[in-house]
Structure formats: structure tokens, C-alpha cells
Image 1 (cartoon, helix red, strand yellow):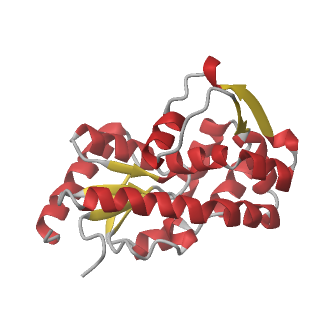
Image 2: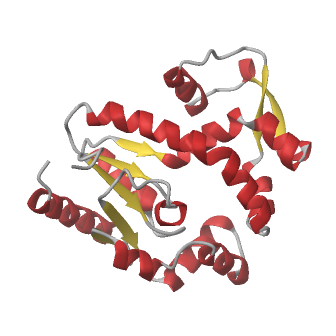
Length: 227
């Protein structure tokens, strides 16, 4: 029996629409573990180490009293860490992303720093949700790339063709075709992910189509999963 029998991973590729699917699931009352949100919080917690490894230019000093801490505060409250009113550092994710997306060695350094901490927090949240005995979802963008999450055994891939992914990334991130294509190709090919999925949510069309696809996905779960 899997460790997390009530969990289904939501994954895909950059531009495939994972966030939109997760929002639709939230609207239906399901709880979501958001790996991206966790990673952003962990990244800021590691700001000092990021500055040491990559350089101080990738870290921004902020006054916590003047900022709305939002998810940063929420994460720290869950992990039991005190939130200081002293200035804290946050990582300039855009600037750091520009570095690591162009340099596999730098990306490997960042992953080695962050992923053990991210995985530990995902596991902590999954144990808490598993105890409730209800279906929940885990949004993990790099599920197939990471090979770190084999404790989850059911995976739904949000799918769109590669050309569509590139077009969406160009529009969303303000990139030219070559840069967007490079971002998409850093990840495992979407057709391979589709083939490895237990469930596929097709997001090739508009929002109305995605709503219908998400509804059909939930119907399949009710028929195929015994949880």
C-alpha cells in the first residue's frame, strides 16, 4: 500500500496550465500542496546561502515590518520558526533564474541546496493531509525530472502540445521564441510525461474546455481509485 494513498500529483510542463487546474480543484473544495509556493519560501529562508554560493547581487534586503509577509509568514508559522521584525533577505528569483537556466552547473548547485528542504516540507504537509483520509492533490511542476517523489504513486499530467507551451511561455514571460523554446526543453518532453501519467488533463483549448477536462478527470478518479 502506498504511503500516501489519498494523494494525486498534478504535474506537466512550463506553460501547460498546472496552476489553472489546481485553482479549479480548490474551487471544488480540494486541498492542494503547492511545491512552487514551498520552494519560494525555502529559497528566501536560504537567502544567506544563495548570496554565499552565487553572489550578493541575487539577494535583496527587505524590512519585514514594512512588508506584507504573506506566504512567507504562513510557511514559517507552520514550520514553527519565529518571524523576526528585523530586516530579512529575499532572493531575486528572476535574476537567479536567468543565471541557472543558462548554466546547468549552477542549476545543480541550487537544486542541491533547496530540494532536500522542499521535499521535507512536502512530506510534512502530505502526512497532515493524509491523516484526514480525504483526496488531496500535490502540485509538483518537476515531478518526473526530480525523481525525488516516489512516495507518491498516482500522477495526473496537465497536457498541451509543445508549440502551445512555447507560445504561452513567450506571452507569459515576455521571451522570444528561442528563449521560450529553451525553457520548455529544459524539462522532460511533454509527450513523454503524457505517456507516463496515470491521468491526463488536456489543456490544449480555452478555460471552458479545461473546466470540462478537469470535471472528467475527477469522474475518472471516482471510478478508478479506491481510497
